[in-house]
Amino acid sequence: MNRIRWSSAAALFIGTILLLNTSSVEAQNPYTSAADVAEGRRTFELDCAQCHGGDARGGLGPDLTRGAFRHASTDDQLREVLREGIDGTGMPGRVRTDERAWKVVAYLRSLGGGGEIPPGDSQRGRELFFGSANCSTCHIVAGEGTTQGPDLTLIGYRRSVEFLRTSVLDPNAEVDPRWWSAQLTTIAGTNASGYLLGEDIQSVRLLDINNRLLSFPKAQLEQFEPVKTSRMPSYEGLFDDDDIDNLIAYLASLRGEGVDQ
Picture 1 (tube, rainbow, N blue to C red):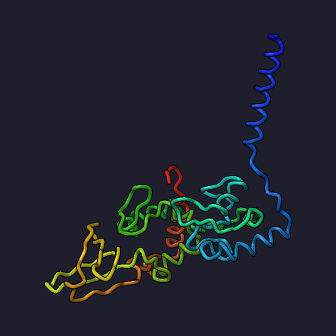
Picture 2 (cartoon, rainbow, N blue to C red; picture 1 turned 90 degrees about the horizontal axis):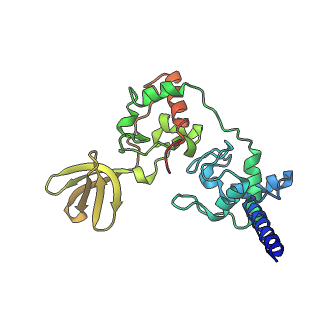
Picture 3 (spheres, rainbow, N blue to C red; picture 1 turned 90 degrees about the vertical axis):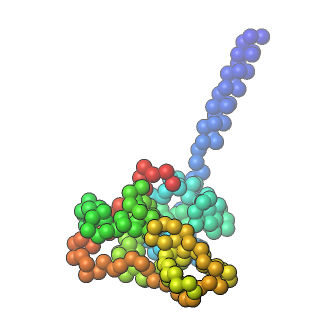
């Protein structure tokens, strides 16, 4: 009787181990042919290019050509991101079926992790960022700097080298509405300016240079002018080509390593 009980217990233990091992195995992509990759590219262009760029090098969303993804390390995790999105980010679940998602994964893997490596010295770029370029007077990186402009801790992950270069040389090329500003004067003669946090039929809300939240009833305004250009200056002509390359190399290196996001 004891032998039977021991055999049953052993069988149950082995079965449990096998079940755990089976459940931990990641699903493998069944769609990896050249035709699958081509179809995955077409799906990407329809569902993903608006944010990640037609060449997957980034735009509103991160560059996907590097072969490393912050929220997924396996093909199965990538498929899940494409289907379900990422909570707390601007990434929605856009791809409608598993088959289409697997083919997009195949397309992304075909890019080979060939993300552009910019020229320049990132260490020298860091010295410029926190020094003579004065970037840290508006931007913050891993807790260092100020919050008058976008947090750049993850900018190298989120944006392509081409996007970074355009932002440095032509900040007005694309300005996120979150960073629009405004200038106003009240009937009483008070002047104010800052980031335009909100506007409705009754009031205007600003964040001023001292990070104070200001609210003004529209009935009390003499003048109100939204400014949809960037408050950031162009660095074209302020630094030579080598230092522009150095600054961009530093920005491209910012991937949020060691930062919990």
